Amino acid sequence: MEHLKKNEVFASILIVIAGGCWGMIGLFSRALSEAGLESLQIGALRVLVSFGSLLIIILATNPNQLRIRLRDMWLFIGSGVLSIAFFNVCYFMSIEENTLSLAAIILYTAPSLVILMSKIVFKEKITGKKLASLTLSFAGTFFAVGMFSHRIETSLYGMIVGLGSGLGYALYSIFSRIALRKYGSVTIMVYTFFFASMVLLPFSNPAKIYDVMVHTPTVLISLFALGWLSTLIPFWLYTKGLEHLEVGKAALLTFVEPVVATITGVVAFHEALTAANSGGILLIILSLVILNIKFKIPIHQTASKDYNKV
Image 1 (tube, helix red, strand yellow):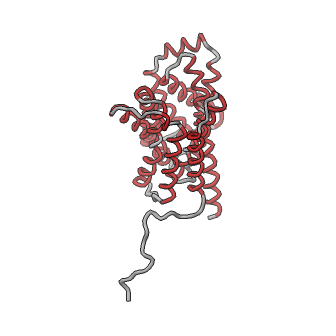
Image 2 (spheres, one colour):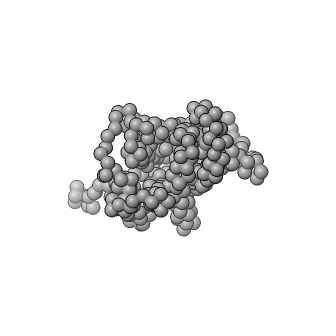
Image 3 (spheres, helix red, strand yellow):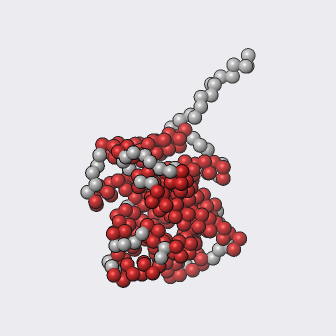
């Protein structure tokens, strides 16, 4: 039992670090955007660099990790196409239709979707602590991304593609957790990135990407930083963490991402840190504390005595 608890603590640390790495995406993607690359192109290059790097590592260390059964291919199509590729396409469409803040808020419906799906697929309990953590985290994200300083405007289409991004984001946890029953985290990732790359690249205008790379070769630094520090490493940490942690709890721990994103904006891009931003960060931190401390929050009260007995 003690060993299992240590594994859970270690897994939680891995996932929090993963969320932190994802939160630094803006540090690298902004440089790529300023060089002339569009969001979909950045997303395609992100998974392509991750796939290529991981493939080289596997071939140099343990090629057996590439072995999979054809009947299990649906798992990697699910994690690569239905999750990563679908998430990227929907999120970029959401950014175009909505404000950046609203797109981020809708995206973070993902943990609630993960909790619901993990209840159905893995029979995980929806506890009071999870609901309390989810409520505080979502409210904290609302403040952290500055939604209260903007008027909320969207369309039915904007809401649909936004929810699609949240669904795609959530599905990685589900497909990868199922795949972990048969394969290691590295195997899951390499095929996930492979299928995601194959779907995204044809729609990303490779000719324009090549042109940008030729005229601005320094973007390669930002590209590989994005591919390694904000994609390959965090996905490995997150997938590894799923080996020893409930899917619902793992999804909630990723709420550290908007905290790091906000701090990154303040430190790297000199964005203003408002009282709302600070309050949001504190709410998210509080939600993570509630999720990890040992106490129970009952969802409903039950009678302590059976008054039908005499």
